Image 1: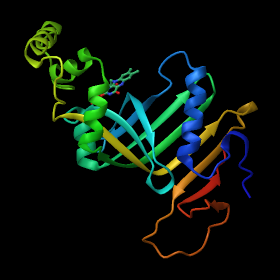
Image 2: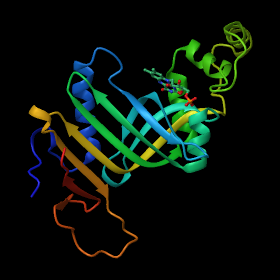
Image 3: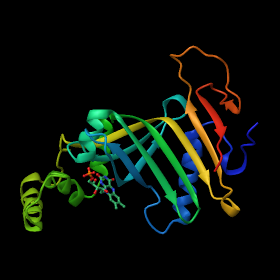
Image 4: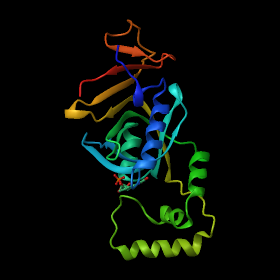
Length: 220
Ligand SMILES: Cc1cc2nc3c(=O)[nH]c(=O)nc-3n(C[C@H](O)[C@H](O)[C@H](O)COP(=O)(O)O)c2cc1C
């Protein structure tokens, strides 16, 4: 029995994440959708940077977390190599965090096109002008690339092939909320491995109604 109620209640981790993000949108002064995205490089060295989570889509078995970036950036190359990433979102106003670890795939082109087309023109041109994470000899070089883009790309530039969305499909999600005297609440959701023989539910775990997730309370 892990007494999951209140802000932790629910049978779908994506619903809970959307609910928490909606609360953060009215409580946080800036960027409630900012996440610290961790990847691992070819040497096994972890790397981390902030990106904006743009969608929490789908539910249960099929839900994913989506962000947009340059596929040839450092993070893009690390993701292409490993197919994995993790992120944490922390809301100081709510004193809560969500942690996710999972497998990453590129969003379908149509989805990346739609998001790219929704951005302000200057941001769309910026995606063309900035070879993200590559060496840049001066700020002037970047400004010139933007000016050149404004001249040559017109008012409806196509999305650069090296820029688009990534979908993170969680293997694990943890919901954490601050408690008095560091007695925080933590609930970990782990995707059930359907390719492994099922030896029953380990002690301390419950199962979501769909059978997709196993859920346990963790010590803070
Ligand atoms: C609040 C905030 C939001 C950001 N959002 C994004 C984003 O959505 N996509 C992105 O590629 N970089 C974003 N960045 C920049 C990244 O943190 C990072 O500098 C850049 O993506 C290059 O990272 P890399 O060299 O590890 O690939 C954001 C930075 C901050 C501080």
